[in-house]
Length: 231
Ligand SMILES: [Zn+2]
Image (cartoon, rainbow, N blue to C red; front, side):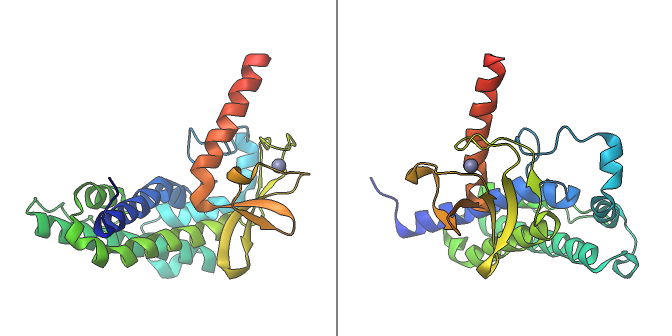
């Protein structure tokens, strides 16, 4: 039994919303775009090392601050703050439209200084009716793209502190913006994953766009688990 076009479209919108939900906390934290238990978060970073990462700290400050946008300390911080705000507004609108269409109670709007799109994204993803899928598709896709762009501003060039499951080299994965604005993890090792595990290559190196990162995380977890058992 195959899904009808509208069912497929609905599933795609829900997937985009779930993606936005998964990366929303990372946008707010402006840390590595994989929260626990995703393995490539820099868990081993000491508090001192963390304090040195003043760039992150400033972004963090900008996001937590309820002060006016104009007072944020740097253009990038403003952009990330603005991205989070845009997504919150879109998510609130989306959830309200869904509620109205399916006849469910509307979520209360975010209070002043409250920067949490997650409940609205979750509500929309849970209740989105097929009839709204076409309308919601570009909104959900735009949210995903905005979060990816904002995270990349923070993570571009960032080396991930883990071992590649395929070439077994450590600290060879880097977050990079590729031409066309695609954000990907590129392995810099002598690396040839099986074709089914890598969709894209960049200058002869395997790379994985953000949409593949959950899958990538599973591979890393398997390898880390195996290493832990072996040691
Ligand atoms: Zn590799």
